[in-house]
Amino acid sequence: MSTPIKSSYVDGAFVAHHTSVDLLENRNPSSPDEVIERFVRADQALTEQAIAAARRAAPGWARVNAQQRADSLDFIGTEILARREELAQLLSREEGKILREALGEVDRAGRSFKFYAQEVLRADGEKYPSVRQDVSIDVFTQPVGVIGIIAPWNFPIAIPAWKIAPALCFGNCVVFKPAERVPSSAWALAEIISRAGLPAGVFNLLIGPGRSVGDTLIRSRDIDAISFTGSEHTGRQIAKIAAENMTRVQLEMGGKNPLVVLDDADLEQAVDVALNGSFYSTGQRCTASSRVIVTAGIHDAFVQRLAERTRALKVGDALAADTDIGPVVDARQLEQNLGYVSIGQQEGATRVCGGEPVDSPSGAFLFTPALFTDVRPDMRIYREEIFGPVLCVLKVDDYEQALAAAEDTPFGLSAGIVTTSLRHAEHFKRHSSAGMVMINLPTAGVDYHVPFGGNGASSLGAREQGTHARHFFTRVKTAYQLA
Ligand code: NAD
Figure: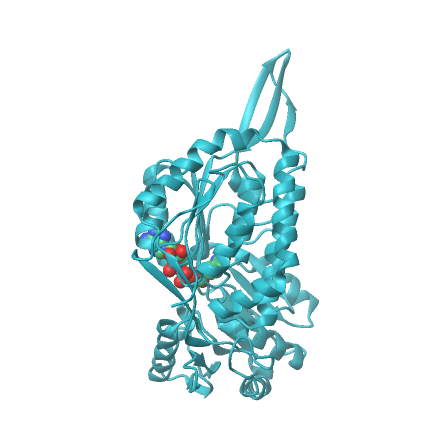
């Protein structure tokens, strides 16, 4: 085989290897016979080496001049943006989102690094008078130390970027483990970071499985904090171990995000918002709207128009110019989506359209976006995260019922409403318990400079992104001084 073989990056160097070792093949979901690249899997020993390297580098990096940190972050952001087309193609090939979405994701990754390049120089700290005579108090922040970063597969470059950039910005060292389904974007990002002037050990990449590499990271007493995005199941395991070790955690997990559509909504806008939020990126977004809660007066017209627009979506190769919906990430996820379609039918919901595999000569994992009506709140398709383009419509009488239905979930990541009523928009904004609320906008699609995160079973720990990231990536010091 002539596909390249790549490896992890530890203590300032890509790890040397020979071909006989454990290899991971990265395949294209639009064309599963195509192996994009191959990777040598890291093992427990290499994971321990990476953690030790980060530990050694931590005191020095914490003291490094702020301009040097800013310049490194700016270098990374600049190169990501300059190579956006190439990085987006790679991302589309390994994850399956369409090129337009991949370009948006790459831009977002670049902008995150640029944002934190500025954030390095932001004022930090507070001065207080003391209640004691001649005493003054300084409150300021310091780096946490070594951060373990564990990322999911559905945003192969943006999620790593929005974790790595603030970690480095606030003076921490990083051991980064991407998801095994998307090592190529992670490796490309690491390669850029390797040329950004960071001292050896400050940044490390480990390509390997969650059950060995991930597990070693989360159990290590030399890791000071874990920033994780992924499933609720893995998040809960990490939380338990972190509690024993007293490790700081930031967990971003699943969602079952509601979108409310009221009678007074602009019909076309409501359909646009639902279509985008539920089906784009093949529904593989933690912020996707999978429960659409519609009041009775607009319900039939909404469903009819949504079905027309859903049927018109072109499902196909992620890199084809006319594709609206790319493949699902792999055969297992395709099976899961199809499994939920049968569950929905058995539960008595009506499948209005979609929910079927599509034959393709390349064997792509194609699945048509599915629309279910006659859904009851106790159905599994309405309650469980499917992580695919499957939308359930729940019919309710009025806004009060809609809000109650939106709240009826253990999750709380994102929630949306489409309405022309200022009163209802304002009420929803205040009373939804989701971490992010969208008015006349899709539940998915957020900016890079403001807090990101949810409540309930969706998130645990401090918010990601923007200036709020400081709360997770720094420790607070309170210093008293006698004059
Ligand atoms: P996953 O939990 O299977 O894997 C996430 C990461 O954890 C991977 O890198 C994996 O290798 C690692 N991992 C797995 N088991 C581990 C273990 N025992 N110890 C340590 N690490 C381990 O999730 P996924 O399938 O990659 O991602 C899909 C999930 O991510 C969905 O539930 C989705 O909602 C969620 N997600 C959430 C957000 C958010 O911000 N809330 C964003 C994107 C995705």
